Image 1: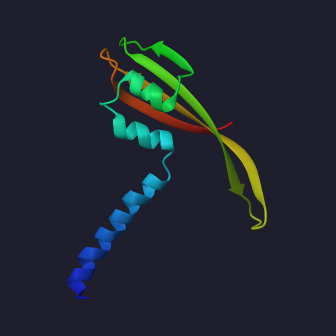
Image 2: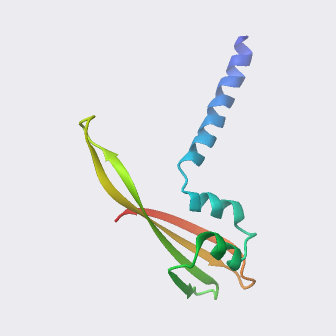
Length: 112
């Protein structure tokens, strides 16, 4: 491989790997919400994610749905033979416009 080709291909490969590796760490809910923002109706989201835990209105009059999930994670320690069991919670805040279309969402993870 020529030096010029290597200079072009190496950074391009690194960028491609970085972009695809980020998707591996997204939750299934985040992957779904990312793919349907500005398209999915409230009923479509409810069909996919289930009933929200809380429904409110924001100061702009938009409908806000809250979801919270809990998942088991194993965390490592300094000792390679030991892992610590823990729970992590994910909170999703979804905002729908006046036409009941998903317009925005946020995801927050925290220990629970």
